[in-house]
Length: 583
Image 1: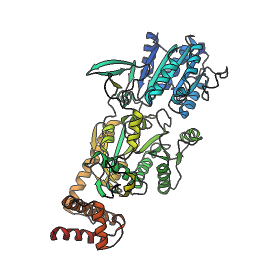
Image 2: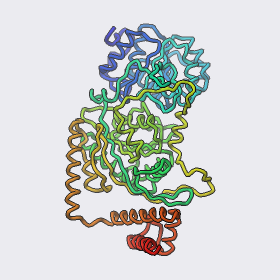
Image 3: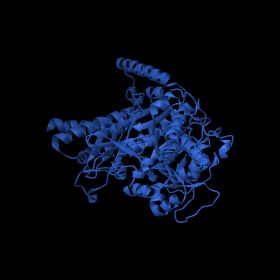
Image 4: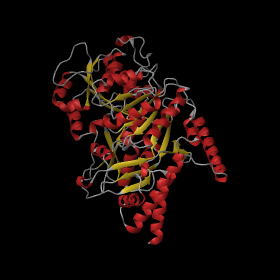
């Protein structure tokens, strides 16, 4: 049977789905209709729908739920979502199609008002009392909607609880926008098939990927603005290290370099936030209510980033912290406002609906493919044809790889028993933990970010890379930040190519007649030269970087390298060169 079920027969508002709020669309999109037709034809007990963020999974699920209620196949609905905020969002979306969902249901209360046709819980809430939910599921013909089902594997106990609670369900509809995990824990009620070499691969009943959604104009294309820069930090062992973000390093050094770049006291974060705000201003010339989101590692950094943004824009951004009881209302208010910026930690994750988000800053040390995909998914929901999303990322190899693979479909893969398993929660924790030298203990000192500079690195778009390294604040950088806010994907690619050609031509012209460098450029070059000489002396003498810098300060005087003047830096450069000649 094709077509949407009769609305009047099931008591739904004639306006459904004319209101295009979160969880509803004016008409079922082609993929939603095709998935609904497939569902009606097969009448499955379990159905896994994989659709890219912003494609409309909620509208599809609520249409299925309304149809099953109308045909009396089910009489109760249980919705499981990753966060408290999403519970409320689901309840509000369901209310728009005359399905009453209780978002405050607790497993201990046993009953809920007869006015409700179901309830919404979190995966953590299910794990708190799966037996009570199992009894409730058995009492009714229940449809269970498992939103972002991959979260059922966040902890092994969560997956077991979901399986125990909902095994008796009449129907189970699983949804996800990121059908993969970094561990190999099986996701409940998902079908797996062998693909060779002891690996099982998850099988979706219907898949609608980012590439398809982009071609259909449902989601925005994403411009990844990558930023590199010169960094300087002190390890727990006391060594001072200078390196370039994204350059050849060990895994530990990449982690330390990223931590240094994300330090709000350095120059990298202010420069990138200023660039992102410049980009947002350009987008708002075409999309007046466009907004930006900064995703921070922790609450301390989130507050610091908010202070930096206030200095840049003159307006205090909206700050959303995970332990704030009013966070959900704050996100909702921001979504309906004209505020430019919101800063959040990890609460703004999959499913959170702020369609006007157009510019993002990935300022978190979490570097798993799952979290990256969830974060980028906040910016891809299209409203008007020609909209683009711009996400600013550190030039870290793993993040750039994730960005280049945006259109690659991933599936959850399991290794057969006997293979080592890795917990996704452990991976997320490891991604946020800075790895230090093996064998060092806390008494040997603390990691310290000493200085950072930001440089525009390149733009990643549609599988290609555009642009060459440019100093933050330069005309070359502004060329890329000033791309019009409304462009078709082929226009974006053509314009990026032309901007790159212009940059190359200017670079060649400068080579013929070099311009006088500004003060901050001179200081940067001197610090870079000094740090390179210190590194060479370290390799020559095996003396720690920190010891070399301290010896130079003792001989030449002056403050630490980050605060030294051009004259002081030049004196240290001349001194270390004299050491090399005398040795």
